[in-house]
Amino acid sequence: MRADQRHAQATECFAFTWRRRSKGPGFRWQRDPEGRTLLVGPPQDSLQPYEPLVEETGLFLTFAHLAATPDAFLRFANRYGRLGTYHRYGPEQGEPLDQWRLHHRWMRFLTELRSACLGKRPVLERCVKWEGDAVVFHFPKIGTGVEEQWRHRGRLRRHLLDRRGAALFQPGDLVGPGTWFLAYAIEDWLKELKEWDKPITPRMIWSEAERQPQLVFGPSSLLGAMVCQLAAAVHGGWPFQECAYCHKFFRLQPGVNRANRLTCSQTCKQYLHNRRVQRAQELAAKGWKIRQIIRELQVKPHGSKSSSALVKAWIDRK
Image 1 (spheres, rainbow, N blue to C red):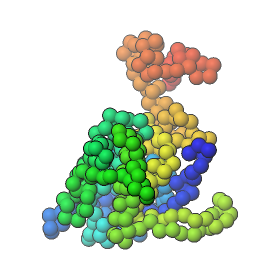
Image 2 (image 1 turned 135 degrees about the horizontal axis):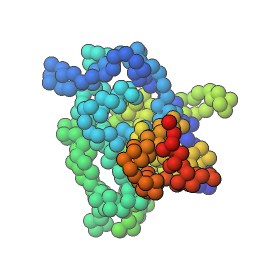
Image 3 (image 1 turned 90 degrees about the vertical axis):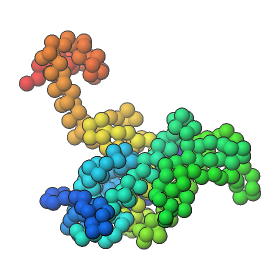
Image 4 (image 1 turned 60 degrees about the vertical axis):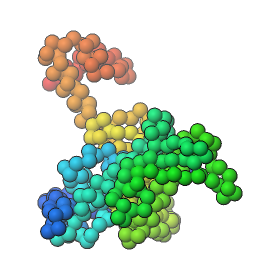
């Protein structure tokens, strides 16, 4: 069976509800007496509950692709809520900006490595190297070393052996060690969440859809939910796509959406179409010929209508 047939969807494996802002005052960055920059905002119980793993099938990628700036993190928090891993909730205490940066840097690296293991060899060659019969992994330095055990060094050297002491991979193989490191790093991240009292715990729930009991795993924070998504994506080998309109990432699922789908929703699809129509009208007003507009906007025939007929209809639309 194919991986997409063999593995359940993330929403079937995890049960998780989080809270986010729907209206009213949002989050903000604030300096505390110790000079730290903290994310503060509304109390958690005043926010609107939602299910991130149901609504955002590629949230871990959306987070990983953020610009590493306070403004980008703030927009993410106002849209999806706190990371939920540091301090108590409330306006008096918050989540340090440096923690956002560390988690973001690690998520970005691991998602890039996952992508590299699926085919981007030049990226993989920068991260995974052989030294004799040992493998050396190179990654961004995470943390100062005060609390970190190995991630702050930016380099990990391992002899990768199976239970019998034989080599797991042939020298020169990059994909095998790369996927091994993904598992190693994600497992370490999950252990770290457990140490923070933010574990991923098993739960037994009643599934209304299946009308039977169901074993699921419940993250305790938004960061934990995104780590779960990453782990499930590595396990299932799932493909993802960036929405051409809103730039959120979503999972491509056989039987649910096509491999060449460009948008995450019908709403974004309509907005993207309206943008192309507006652009066609702007180019036509500048004197562009229809064949030039077709080439610029990469318009393809649809159904019985030719590219020329489509563009002409766009230009004539009031």
